[in-house]
Image (cartoon, rainbow, N blue to C red):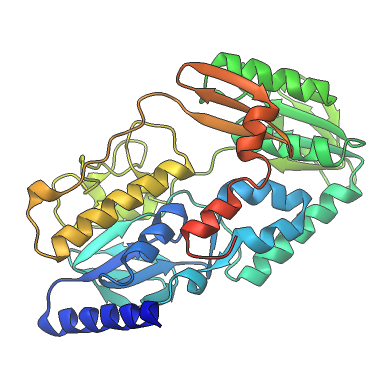
Length: 375
């Protein structure tokens, strides 16, 4: 009862602020890791509008497990309304930004006092949670029906997918092709070597410094040609290469000069778009020089939540929190259900110890708890 009364009081405070025109309208573009955590954090402190083309938040590092075990997605794919209960939810894409409004693809004009861009990478996924769960079931059928599988890409996504399949379906002939000279180029060579050895121990054939011409494959002829002239026979393939940033549309908006050459948004130490006081950016779309990882996107959301609370409550700029980029590479890459490779500042290890940290439930329980949901 006390919690319910507190929520009611906060809602009343928001309504009073709106009547006074206290500049508390916060619009968040993107319902990924960063945007969803920010929406949850601010929903009782401001009038929050979350704009996202899909109806759900998805724990992205659980995607690959969901492909080999579709029921896993029941907990990793979460409707926005399950955690975002006090605010406006707009299921659409932003197509333009002015100094005071956001225009959406369905024709809405949404005014803001403070704007946060958290659109991350472009990833064409279904609109509804049900459709997304069905997609995982279809991917699982694709894996189960294949005798041989090709994974294209040796970054964290390709490696983790290969690991999941190798552990759950050891009878499948699995080939991983990567254009780089080693796997996991975003972290150190020692971690890459340990990963390669683990995959080989699970009978995964790894081909480095090669690419695959996917356009040359026709239905019924599952022969793939590599850039070295090798042929790979596989019943199906999964493309696991980097997705483009979802920022191209910003080049036609008032923020067109706030992007770097790679399409990332330039931000200051408070995660405001450089030179602006009421527009922030968080997550993968920023130009912060660090590895783009979910736990860092969450930390950025926490910093912006603190800063917006200070601003809305009339605090001074000197009270704003500063975001400090991660100084050295820190990463854990799952290798199936029990193993992982981990790079820490002074140590790189693989096996069951890092697997115990991440690979069991892939931090899904912890993330759901952060979102105020049962694990």
